[in-house]
Image (cartoon, rainbow, N blue to C red; front, side):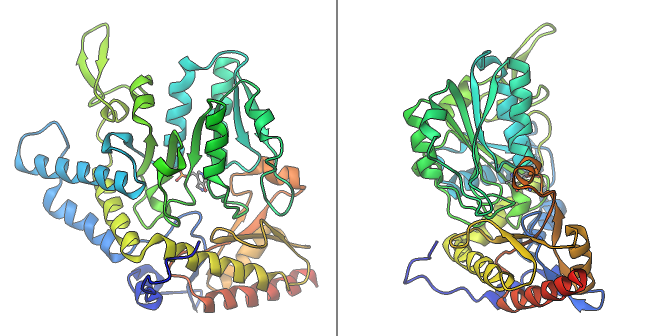
Length: 414
Ligand code: PMP
């Protein structure tokens, strides 16, 4: 993804200084934070928005008529409108605040229980994060539907789309897929996948956990029915996320959780539901989280998501090329265009040992199955080491990563 030719080049070094946590040593070495696919760090603008909210405006939303409640409600609904703009939703009512991607995906899977019948199918890919697999397994178990899978080609981590139309024709009701794979770095062709699903009348669910903070997203251009993401993976706070849903679908869906705020009228025996999106937001929401997410969206868009995608994509491609020279390494995911992360195995070393080795050098990596166990089983391994990049990472940090992984390969490889 390239930014427009006339776009100003961000001052990446100055932006890095916006993240106070990065200015520290770990085990006596400068911190190199490369665990951004798990969670990103927060700029001062987000931290200050949270402090400002709690110091000046904190109250519960919607139910109060006093000044602070008015301010909290205004801030919360402003964050909703900002989220709609961030992904180009038609109206703010299409934005549901959740705890994160996982809750958004569970919300859809749960509320679709009454709409799925035995013999229906739910299509996912072999590269799903468990968050975009297990909720569909549970839905299938509740309804008697079956799960179908778009295959992954191999270590290059691409989707094999040759049989997609045949799969979609097998009574599929929902097709859920990741925009960017958190294990492989693959950027899936979301536009094409949504268009092909639509031709079969299939509802699409895009897991945008790894893309929303990195790429520009336009849900109307994509033509997806649902899209979920997490604030904490895009410079925002933990505990807040967004589920986008097409308004007509949200109106037709059953509620998710019952409680305050989601009702219109309650009697002892039964209730009626509030309007969308409140129908899906039972109880007191994470108001401060929404305020912090608003600040994060402003922060990212002031830089420009095309510039961020170009920056972390380049770091990942450079890391991939540098690591390819390390003895005994096995790299996963596409060699060319990729999202901002690299996953690899080292002969003779468990991923956790590699992560511990890197940690002693101040480098934060992640080792394990990255919540994609079935994918790794298919590829014949149990765990990888993952380095994932964001806007504040530098070419010098890629050099340091390559140097330390080379040392690790020699240490564990003998
Ligand atoms: N999907 C993908 C592709 C992810 O990378 C993650 C987080 N690792 C999730 C879903 C779940 O996100 P969260 O834990 O924020 O709900």
